[in-house]
Every structure is written in structure tokens, then in C-alpha cells.
Image 1: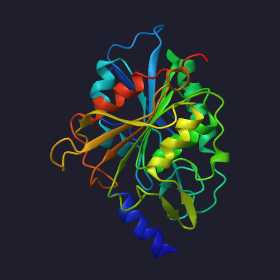
Image 2: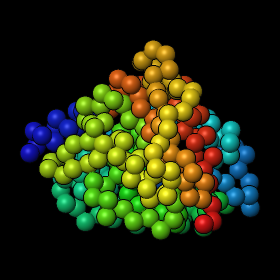
Image 3: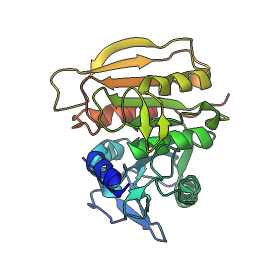
Image 4: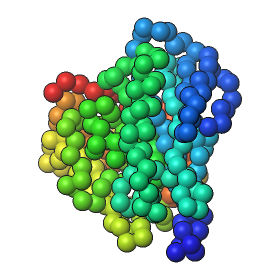
Length: 291
């Protein structure tokens, strides 16, 4: 078992405050501290979007910050950002208790859903957070956790971006009470979380296409998604515009369910300079609306 986990660790990893490039980096102390990054133009009383960025299995909060690289655009657009850390498993690796497949390999009782909701509540108490624009992005295990939150806390979450994650294999485990916009980004050559679905330690996870099909149904979208242009450049290692876009339309409350496929992309793509702009634009284009 340890050897299997160590192999998974190597593949996956392909609240210490970081650089003080903004008006303030606010550290919330406690058993699981986290850092809130305020944009330079933050004004109390003016509701601002909030983006929660979740790291993958074994990684830490600074990794999500540096990997997604959304600080600059978040500062320009007046977005609050927060980089929390998962809890440690028996091998000392940080994880999120997301879905049965990933990545609570010790069957821990940790409640990350409650942790993230308490974090949102704490930030909203201290700062002007727009409740209609609370978003989550996550890589790998963080992507699974983003799906978990969309399924379980749909009244609080407007939209998510999952990079190399997946939703629940058992669709009965995902029962949102409010539509949530979902963007699934996945490399077709992902050797860790397979684009076509698979198993982790005996627990199934769905394919990237199945993931958006589930959300297309939950959001009461049209019957089938359609290819849309333009293609995107999300991976600096791959030449040209390697990423295709598959989008559901006609969804409830202005939501969407989309799949951005990075052709020949790996589990941890070398994200392009346009990646952050693309995902932040997707999130801001999909605030929570009344149904």
C-alpha cells in the first residue's frame, strides 16, 4: 500500500504567507490557518468576488498560488483570493476529503466541506464578499474537492473550475439544490486521473466527458454539448491552440457545463500565460442568479 501511495505521490506532485504584492495578505490563524489576499483596489462596502484555490494531493497552499498564477488578474479585477491547505494523512501528505475516489486514503473523518464553508463565513464577516460570486478552482484532488462543494454547497458556490479532477462516480451523491456553472479542464494524456475515467485504490471516478454530462443534466441544459470556437492555448509546452471547448447551452439560471480538453495534455500541464485570464473570465461570467 505504501509503495502504491508513493507512486501516486510522485505522479500527483509533478500557510505560509507569500509575497506581499497586494494591499494586504491577511493570515487567519487556527488549527488550519489560511491566507486571504486582498486586491489593491479593495473597498469595504463594495461587494467583491471571492476565489478559493485548492492544491492537489501532497501539495500545499503556496503551490496553488504559484501554479494557477491568478494573483495579477485578481488584483486587476478586484477579486479576493484565498489559498487554504488540506489536512495531513498518515504519511504526512496534505489531502482534501472530497469524493470516495480522491483522496482520503486513510478514511479520515476530517470535514473539509465544513472547513471551507466556515472559511467563507469568516471572510464574509470581515470583508465585503459578494455572495453571488463565490468561486472555487482546484487541481487534481483540489478539483475533486471543487466538485464536492458544488454538489453539497450549491447554494453558496456560483461556479467551479476543476483541472484534472472529477465529480462523484455515483450520481446520487451529487444533489445540488441550485445550479452551479462547471468548467472541467483535462489533459487527454493524463496518466494520474485518466481522461476516460478509472479507479483510485478501488474507488471509481468518471471520465471528463461524463463529468460535464452529469452537470449538464443537473443544470437542466440542452441534450448535448456542442463544439465552440476559438480553440485555446492553455499549455505552454504544446504548440499552437491545443485545447478544444465543448459547451452545454440553454442551462438553468444562465449556468453552463463545459469541457476544455488539452490534446496530449498531462496531469499537471505547463500552464500558459493566458490560462489565468481564461479561467477567471469564465468564473466572472457566471455569477449565481436567482432561479
